[in-house]
Length: 293
Image (cartoon, helix red, strand yellow):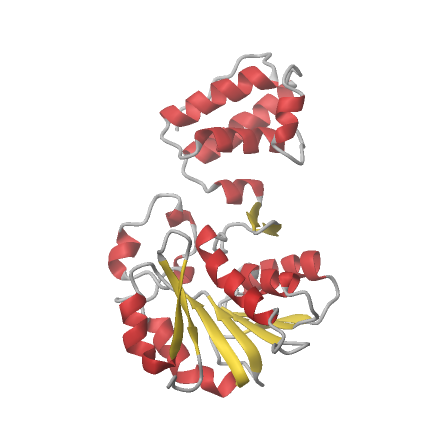
């Protein structure tokens, strides 16, 4: 990796301009955002805006050295969220790191559908929620946080590293509320029933896995790999979800933009509602335990 040369004394303004150009030349997406985020981190600023409020401040030699190291990591393809240790999702900051999937904008569609359902007058007053394949816990924690009522949340994942992040994030955003983490391979260790099952399973097929971007290659393969056709986890979910839903309960699934017809074929009439984002891209589905009329 080529070394990164920086002037001995630069103000935040000059360093931001220089580092943005440097990252652009290295082919880093959203170079300005990356430069702002990394510079704010080394300056111990809580907001990127603080850089602009202190544009004339010179960086210390220690800050320059730290910034150089972070730039090297970024140009090496490491995701920005892994470098900073956090990713924002619907206004909440989630701790992430190597070994756990980084929360994505795609998941917001599922989260907001779940929140809307929990806020309906007919919804349970203390809903029991299961987040399968929870990863960092972003889906279940966000839904429980935004529901506007006390929730009983179970965060389940087969990966111990993911559960550690989920536990930290739940403590951060839900405090000592009614939640717990559970090691489970899908429904394997799940006992009891729920009003809402949330799941963002691995759903990339082999073709998409082989074509994934360099940054995505830093994320855990087991959190992405959905088998040859990307549907392995959906098949398992289709076999087991009915046994874990309360009357009137639903399962909300995230899926790939091109998997609408595959899920429709797999779940049949139990696919109650396909979910699309604002750009009309397919993002997932609402599944009911009984066939729709």
